[in-house]
Length: 484
Ligand SMILES: Cc1ncc(COP(=O)(O)O)c(C=O)c1O
Image 1: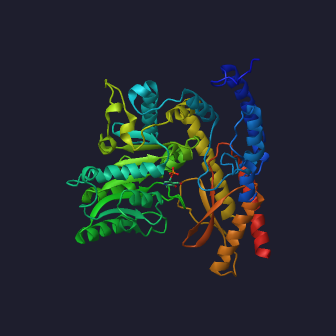
Image 2: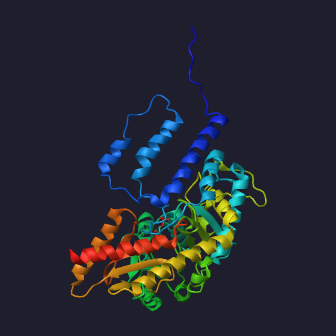
Image 3: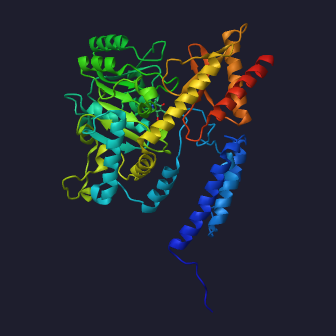
């Protein structure tokens, strides 16, 4: 009797194409019906676990069944960031070329750690980093690398800043005999700076969060004074992190003036342009941004602005070798021959094995062109202007971040006769009502005025009708909330 064993090995190329076509037809339906779908789910967490929690599958399952389960049990219970009416946090996009690039990246599965391990992929990454530097107006002749996100990029930049501190050689000797190092930010700076201080052994106590000015920006004079005070007290000022597009309100720190303070004290300046950097592509924003090339290091996130899915963040450092002198460590098994032009990206961060992240950016930038990307960013700015105008023209609505050049609108509804606490509560109810309804999805922050509703516009599918609809929802929720 002969038994037929299941074949070993991968799907055949024909299987891959057949299943790929099924997936693409699902994606087509997904995008054709996306606008009619809710942005989020309201299923309780335990129930969502129950939908997907099953014993380890021992026997093979046909791919169409796996796909069906994903579409029936997973997709409806996601918060869809790539939805035209997703306006929470920072609205971002996953565009067609990037979706296909992710598939090609996985198929090629190269590891961009050493030149020999992925030669043309390292060349594409070099080219893409040059294009991104061009978009940002930042010199491309220093160190540069693609990483997963701005949080790690900032950690790496601050590690490089620490390594450049004269006379300490912390990479070699550790922190035990180092003086107390200080990092300066505003109280609007992203928490990734604090996480970096935790990781680098600098400690949360040594991150100085200076109170932001009313427009949310870091005050260079207060910075200068605090650095002087710290020097007198025996601290060693290490770095300033300035932000181009703060998380809460899209404020812009005055980078040029901050750079002067940093230069005067020999302190490293890291610019966190995770959100704001690539908006420089559109004329509508560029004129409101400082030159970025004064910063010693810079991070900007394609996965926030450049129509690019998670994860892709670009880290630049003006000083050649500053990143590589911090992270280069080559055990014998990783030694390879070097030739003119070869780049070993493993030397620029903690990551050894690295995805071919540059491919999706290469495809996005070539497919849309920088002009096509800029036009889409301009359209987002136009829609944000319309929303601001609607709020300005409606009694009791206020735009609380009018200073921000980005399509991020912080709204507060403040009818007369309510205490600040009651107004906070009303805005919280408006926010929750929008998200419970599920047609649109927004987030919030708390400013000196109180609780505000944040509307970030930047998804590639968003149209004016989506913003008009959101405004209708906001005003309806406000009227119902006031009457309640
Ligand atoms: C200003 C700023 N910096 C850094 C980050 C962290 O980015 P990532 O999620 O890529 O680590 C964020 C996230 O929203 C941010 O708004």
